[in-house]
Length: 161
Image (cartoon, rainbow, N blue to C red; front, side, top):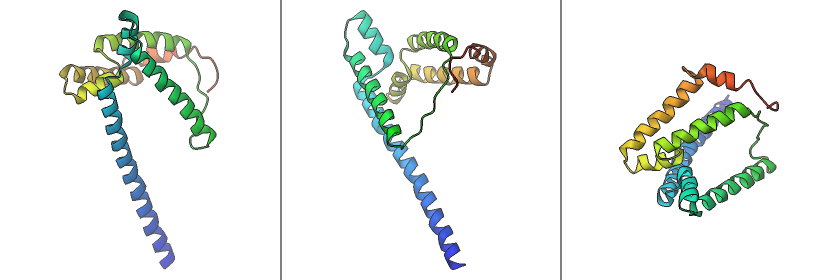
């Protein structure tokens, strides 16, 4: 009886510690990520715009570096059996049309998700409007008025994920 109660107390403490640790690590990661984005002024919209219009490849090279680190890192974590990634289906029609609409959106918003995020942290009111539009678009596509279009575009599928 005593060992069962002790086991329950230990498990509760472990669960509370893990949850608290996740919260602290999430907040710390968010602060570090936000600081890096804001100081580096990193935004995909800026990376492609600067590459095309003023022939400055600085942000584009940073994007390629981030992409390389992500690809190597995710594969290393999978090889070490830390994470488990599963194959995903490819929806060419949805990806092409969605990518085009997303591209228009980041041009109208003046930045991508990371760009508007650090601008919100700087207190730029227009970025709050962009964030609201971002979430409104997500809601309309996954559960709202655009859901039938979303489902129709996902009927063309390559691969079984």
